[in-house]
Image (cartoon, rainbow, N blue to C red; front, side):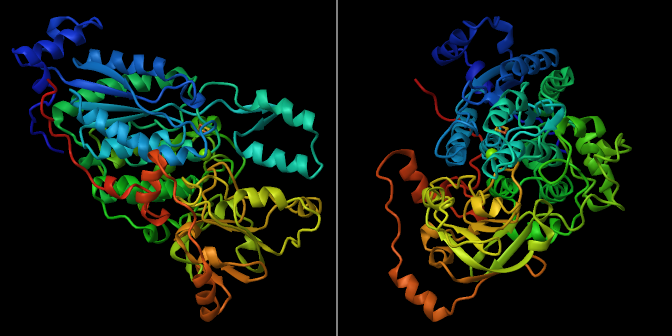
Length: 573
Ligand code: FES
Ligand code: MG
């Protein structure tokens, strides 16, 4: 840890005794800050993703107040600011289209303002990576505070998980196993408190990554949003960020290669989301850490899954918290972690998880009798995915992990929706469903549509899983034998674009193989016929499709990769 005191950048605004200093101080005082708050104390930006359009972050104004308390207690000066908040459930065509835009908002808001250290308030799926990415490109001392998961959903005496329960019940309705009325009744029962999805979906996986990376105080990931311990953690984080500024504990001290390797292992052990792969690749590339898609396979795929949570297992985040949360999991796999990785509290991961207890062995299994073996995300390669594709074996059907089947191809998501339940569709459970044009450029934004619903006539046989392949992502709450993130994607002419009905496809997860059984000559003929889709004409979407990188690189915009630090820009007047 460095202890060299850097000159605080906020002084470039607040200590000047001229016309400009007048402007910076006078207008800030309107909000009720007495003159002595400008005496050079650390100014802490609280980056808030509260929005009515992001219901998972609805409690963030209250959470920010607790952070502020902590900042004041430690002698800092808190200034809260809003940033774009792409909410997973409302924004179309997909929140992922706007992750990079939000990250630009975060980066420029930090750099352009009198801020010495940052608290990131993150919750709903994309709000975590966008804040981490934007902050990483500035690199100031930064601490994460997650919003926390909702309480368990409760429906007719049973727990139901957000996301996972929707996918399951909607298939039950289509298969005739649940009435429409029951399905509607479940709406009010599933998401009944503040907080993020309480399955181990993307929000909880990313919150666990924030903790595993060392970017938050220990325990950050699992405390339920309505539990008052969440507010206390926010308050303590407010205190701590002031010290971090005093210690000049910048983001690059924490986000090291070792921290990312720890995170990859933890994501496997918790049965975390496939989306984490893309987000952590993007964050790493912002901070200048070499991390490749292949690292996920090499470091994580042979890890056991210890955590029995939906969508891979049974329980929900509230149970996970009571069982000990991320510290208990990390303690269980401590022999596989870089224990000397530094964390936001100034201690190492090893110190933080020392003797972390597990209170429920049904929720967090011991390493010698894990919940699932070899359960980390696997990276597949082959002529169908030269730059890779991913699958989450813990959420797949074991008997489908090695499979050869006839392709049934859908050109777009609309094509799929139109034909899926057509009784004339030539498909059975042995087929491989292929969905094109849902990648970063194709959708655009790489939507969570990779867990395609199964055809009605297959569901009616009582079958609940088939091999599905696409260039899309899937919700972290989803499950099934689903190959995702196929790279390069169809819309840029990747081999996925060339698949046709009737082609044979081989999936062999143990060999990490994804093969299209069509000759090179035939593929070359098809490639000559391929036409790229039209490009959007204006606005952010135009910039996005012109600059977005493929999934195996993290789907960031090419010009955002890397960091510009946080030098003080020239004066505004
Ligand atoms: Fe916001 Fe799941 S939809 S966390
Ligand atoms: Mg999602």
